[in-house]
Image 1 (cartoon, rainbow, N blue to C red):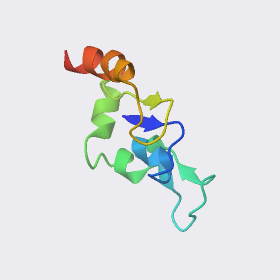
Image 2 (spheres, rainbow, N blue to C red):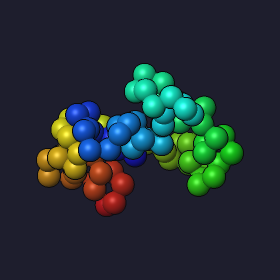
Image 3 (cartoon, one colour):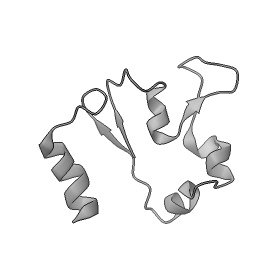
Image 4 (spheres, helix red, strand yellow):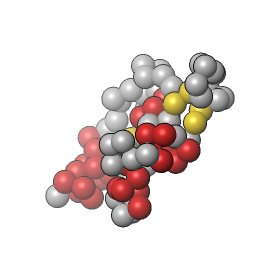
Length: 83
């Protein structure tokens, strides 16, 4: 999973890693970490299984939304996961 360090399009930017505002909060400092969320604990979409198999990877890109270099895409995504 990949999130941009300077994300301004998708809020909260942590939602790229399935982390969201706490219920009723709407404040960026009240983010529920993935492993504490129902989607993970109840394994709604398989994130917990992937994580337990060491197949869930958390990446960051240095830019904004969908602004990453070809080199980053090649070195951090294509070669390790799609080659």
